[in-house]
Image (cartoon, one colour):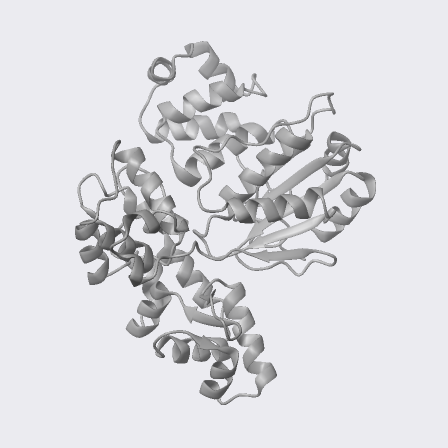
Length: 418
């Protein structure tokens, strides 16, 4: 593929540190004071004299710069990237440290860990809509393999720019060696270099590769695991706080609410609003984190009302009050990738209330069954529809956010509106 992303050319850590510092208007001295570091340490890192800053130093700098979400991940990744070509050592390389425990994805983490460590899958892609929680899931899998099996973890944040070249492939293979290693290519939406992967697999017998992408990668011998949004509660649970708190999307939303509002308890009077939020946002982890960031100034009931007026009008909360994903932009990008036929089918299905089967989609579309079912498959892989529990076979439903968007007929302008 031409969209090579494995060893992309990005700013070095020192340059990125300087850019971030200047962007928030801090001098080296002020940043050093905020991060409880010496000004000489800041100067040495920015000049490149320090090639491998300690993990704790990077954390202190990220806190002092008030980096959150993707900005913080990129900052930490830049520091780790400089260690990619180091010679193998006796100690395995640790994965990035996640902030907080994983919630609602325990089963997926177990299945994915077993696929790599027990069943011997060497190449796995986790695909799903932006904001579905792919990176957080893979962080948990990497943590488990590192702690339980002592695997080394090599983490590459692919970002959105293609690589400049492959001149460091020998260095990467030498750094991995023969030890059990998980190579994570996070956010490889523009594709990966299959020739490099083939060479690494040949030279590194203990290598496993785990990719996250919004669209499944057509890689020979690879396994694709689609990541759906978290389960959402049905209306029958609205007045049962105990049962409600066991549902995946509610569990995650409550964990964010309690982080911002210590001591928060799900009471009967607020339970329907919390359930409604999870349904409105389709159980998408990125959207739930974003809306929870507003919980210090808006109650769940008020948030439900705001989302009812326009689910894409609630922007990100102020810095320091949570991250979250721009789900509107993610949906817009997913819709833009559809063919005209897939888009037409999605709009027809979005206008249909309730869930539906593949046979229903064929009847609704009037197309040949094979063509229609292939389109349904693509919609599912893109994260625009989800499967729902059913006794009479597989059934699906269009995401509520996507349904709102199709009904408005305004998705080309979604990213700007968001």
